[in-house]
Length: 441
Image (cartoon, rainbow, N blue to C red):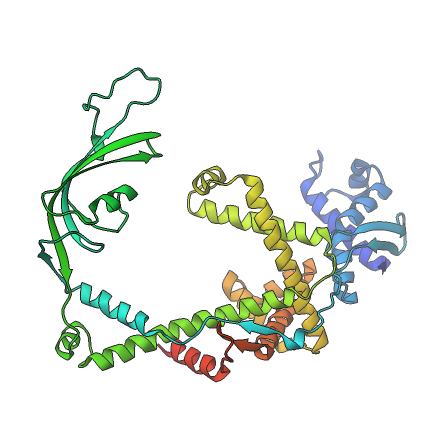
């Protein structure tokens, strides 16, 4: 961009700097705000040096205004070269900046998106019924081999083996500590203690004595366990009858209860399907982008994602080192994952812009005003202040652009072909109707 700034605007910038310096500079014999211009010029190295400093401070605003006026869409910092007006008169400068590229999205009008089925399997309803029955279940002593789901009362004793090279003998008198418990009620198959316990308990009866060894990473050694099975109980669930349904719920019959559970599960599935539809529509669109993406865009997006991750961890009181230790990954692995996600995000941004351009999707001034009001409300600021700040920093076009991309996504979601995981077409009426019901709950 070649930009010319009128001399009057340069003078205003210079006057603003003089007023600020007059308040800030401390000169013997002059009150703050009353320091003459000639004194300030002398302090700054002369009139030319003062003008140069005023231009240095004002150039970012001049550039931001030029970006708004020309509707240029920069993706990097500009290289600015003042070509005239250093000493007097209007100022002219050239700004060289990399702009957001356009990408091709061939075939975007024929995308097919697969979403999870919104139909609720009968076994899901039965599972919910069983959970409700379990709240009124009764533990009954049984005389049979244990099976998954049984509640067993056990005494369990663990002895940690001596660590290699410590010279101690395993005499069975090692400190049991938290490795032992008596009259412990345990659900077989729950995996609540060590995996070997479930294997040992399956098929056992009351009175059996069991032994096994487990390698515990927390202790960095093996532990020998002895288990005494003292009792086996089975959770007996109430029969599924209308009487039970009336006692356990607000419904009079099992049929009504099942219908309600099915409807609730369907609403959940519809909500999940709609989320999947939007995400997978974007994923399918991104697959069409084959151009090379400017590295500066990916690195900027990566920096934002790293910042977001750090902020989320800090809000939970977790440091990056703790997070890496807990997940068993190193920093480079996390960065590689975030970089791949950043590249996907940049491609999605460019692809949605391409859809908006291809479909002539525009944003009205009223829609921009609505966005500004939403931003102001979120930040608890006056909307006119928000508008002025965005205009001053040259970010107001980004508000319009974001709204345009959102409309492009809505268009895309509304025009892709939707099928379930079996390849069967999904009616949008089903999705829309159920979403309305979900919002009314």
